[in-house]
Length: 166
Image 1 (cartoon, rainbow, N blue to C red):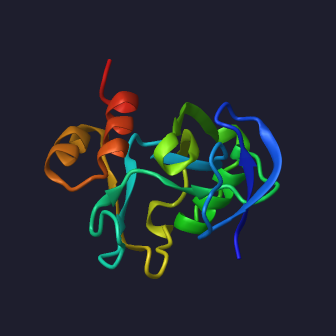
Image 2 (cartoon, helix red, strand yellow):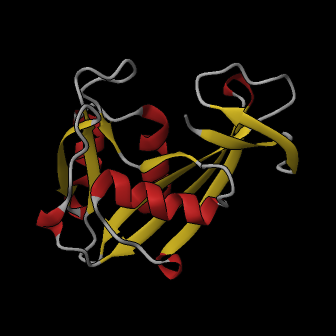
């Protein structure tokens, strides 16, 4: 059973807790974190979602991430999620906050990061039933990759705004 802290829409922590899979009361939100991973050589990591995933099966994800657990702040949650989903061990000084927004329909507060690493590119770990493959896309091929491959649209926009727009 996964327990989350509950927040108001403006990000203030409440005394309530939420449980994954249960209805979230009106006016409460949970914290979700995402991180785009860049290698020091300029390539960007994309993880291919398993074909059994209910949303965006076989699409590439530009981020690792998920829900913050009870007691975690966003920075702790993103370090854990990146480690669980890719095997990459980041440190707090490697992550950079990109943006945050409230998804009212999903009752989520998103905190979005990017990080640069020199992790062994061949040492990425896949999660059973979550991801089926990964690819490091070099900067010079990034625009073409985003135009020709199935990439989750919102994440595609993040990558473009961070690494393609001047």
